[in-house]
Length: 486
Image (cartoon, rainbow, N blue to C red; front, side):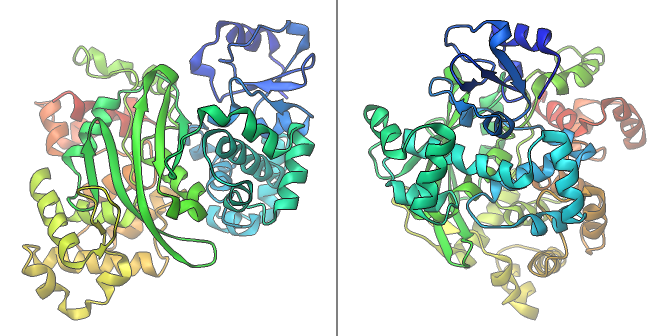
């Protein structure tokens, strides 16, 4: 429970979107909890209790508001996670809420014991990791019941409850409703296409045009399409039981509601939490733009408008795909790298039926690359890839397939970058770029990048690195601001 009630109530009263997801408000007169942007009638201050997370509010006995929908609130910034593994653990719990991954496995990925994780998690959030995971599942289920036509059974399975009875019991216990009642309440507002369409919130402002433009310039023909101001791509993931699943996603922007609209093919329902987590990562939805701007606004002393409030760092959906493209892009143009990547997709990608023009293949997996063996230089060579880069791609595939490099929410991006640098053909620029886009590392800086040098002419790489010290811990955002200024 948060105790600075005066300032929090002021933010709640102002409906300030900057605080959305940073705290939740329990209202004793109604028994519900709200986002700070809720437009329902303003409750009295003495009836309000403030919580850091939705899980803490639910453990205190409050039900989620049906108007502001706490399940749509943006999550915690990754920058906090660099100093506190609790936030990384929370993100992993959100991603794994449908997969059955346990606390011990998450702790191992974070480089600590499960006992330590439970202790610090409870100290930070006032709820145990298990209770937090339960809330993640309940809120995702509420979102699916509200916005889709999925059966209650499918909702229960997709959100990791394991059985319909357990789902019904917990939903009624914490939300005071049986799932079918909530389903009927929102029956007229649902998407009836058969696919799954959900909303993912962000903290405004959000420069959708810049993010989409960045992705469009690097889109790989066959796996990605940008059209009608939307982003579409093919997807390949494995379910908790090891089943290979493929499909597609479409992402659009609804600025009036401060959300991205995400449509997922029904074939990906068993891995829906993973898909949504990757979309949040790709579009940097956890970012706190005001916190970033507070540090980086000094860039505008170098050049007016160099740092723009709301700038995001585009992440990636498929870390191997992005990493291969980064290797291909060494010392050639962005367009040329996209051409080479498209040739690899056409030759060695996995064909997939999506019914969407332009989405025809899954990018080759590390296993497909490894199957080429010693012949990789010949097989990729005929596509225009040099033998040196072919070998780098092969070694990268080896490292990922063996689990030697963690491109997820790893506990030490610096250590993972050292492992990348040990691969012949990966230098400082490539390692920093991969960390920035795959590991969500907010403090990467590419001082040798041609775009960075062009945006700040007259500086040597060493001078740029010294200049960027003032931009920590947001140097990834500084880099993107420099690119956007060109």
